[in-house]
Image (cartoon, rainbow, N blue to C red; front, side, top):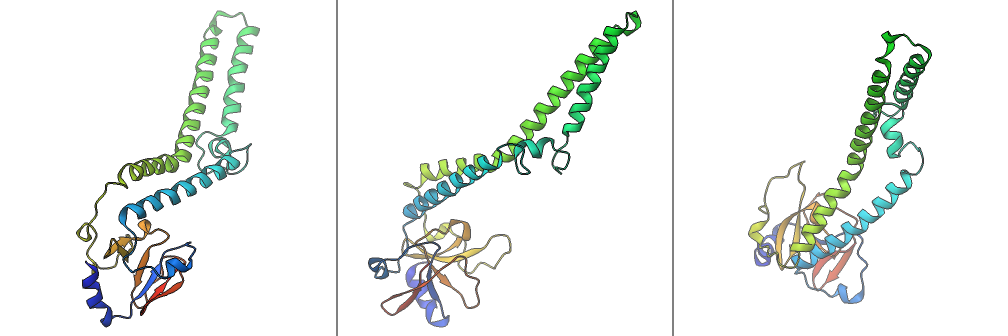
Length: 232
């Protein structure tokens, strides 16, 4: 819906403009228009914010994975108290001991009936190595899944943010019913009022609040001419 259309709705509802989270306001921005951010700039800001959050997450994960702490990959994969472990370290030790015992029994007995013991011991060690590798690999995949998917999102944002042309018709209808699955927010983008998913809001966005609506982020008011705005 265009800005002209939204202005027709404004007298019927006590809308207030908001600016999305964590944006530092200066005097020049206080005098900005109500056209909102261009889509290309918003996607660029989204790419920047996601990159910062991903770097912080990876640093935190690197600290957690030091040693055998309760949140490390090693703990999660093999500790007997880990609810996600399918092959505990106690099982690893027991199987290794069993393989060693079979080798000792073979060395201590010259009976031909025990010639198969080395083969049994070999397959036990092979099974231990294979299971340890698979459990470790599965745990690593689980820990790296979110960063990997996030890197794919960042790659797409970097590729498309400069040439994506979104019109008001590309967004959900302004009067779409509320859904607990996808939370939409009236936002000013490219001079239009659009129904934007919360996950696409960035710092610097100007949003319109309905009466009784939950604020999507930390915001603060601003005043431009006769229109009330709220900045973060």
